[in-house]
Each structure stands twice: as C-alpha cells, then as structure tokens.
Image (cartoon, rainbow, N blue to C red; front, side, top):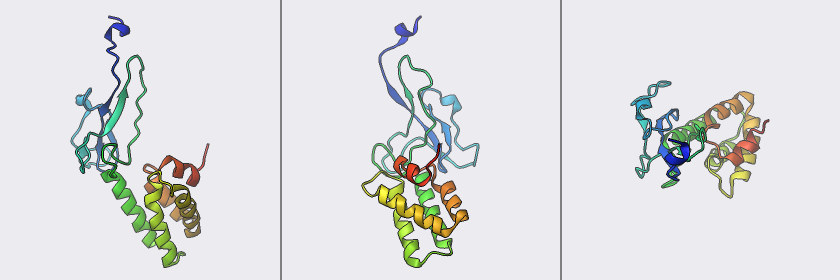
Length: 170
C-alpha cells in the first residue's frame, strides 16, 4: 500500500501527556499509548492529558498526511480551549514571584513592578513589550544570579515576543 492510498486527507492534533512540572511524557498519547506513563520519569510528578480547568485535551503531535516528523515537543503554557495557564505555567509564575521576594537591591516598588510584569511576559498581550523591557531592566538591576534564576524558571513559559526581547540570541 502506498502512502497516497493510506492518506485519508486528515490533519489532527494528538493528545499530549505532560507532567505537572511541565516535562513532556508522550506527545502522541492517543496514537501511541504504549509510551504513556502515570508519572514523569524525570521528576516523578503525576501526568495529565487534559486541562484541569476545562478538561480540554492538551494538544500534542500534529499529524499531517504525507508529512513526517512535523510535530514538536513544545510544551504549551496555556490551554487552547479555555486560555487558562496549565499547572506548570502557574507554578513557574509562582516561583518567579517568590524569587522576586528574595531579591536584594530592589525597592519594594520595583519588586512589585517585577511581579506585575510576569503575567504579561508569559502571554502575548498588548503589554508584553513594555513588561519585557521592565522585566529585563529590573532583573539586571537585581544581578546576574537573579537574572539566571529567572531564566531557569521562566524560559519554558515565556511568550515568543518576551523571549526574544529578554533573552535575544543566535
């Protein structure tokens, strides 16, 4: 049977299985359930395949007829069905805010500005560029160790706009 005979013309998203800490376990849990696991092999956290808020399935591998290897292992920050942040996004935002409280060298007002910027750098909003500029300035003022800490915490959930502005690279 040739691939053309097999092709039914359908493009669809498989369901991803992701642990509560944001590690990809199986990007194709419907089509390849044998690779699924109840717990993450990296951190031991329970895994989910649907949004806790709306129960919508987490989008995984994009199946496209006659296209192989198109799917990415990208972990979404927000649910495509309801827009709410996934648990790993919420935890990263919470950790970034807690890190802000630990910083020395920033005034209470600057810490508050930094915390307020976090929501706008994890989602592309009209305020993302402003928030990214403010975040970059205040994180740099807090020092290299703080800036690296924020990068470790937030890099996986930053919006593309914010990522390019805060961590430009090759």
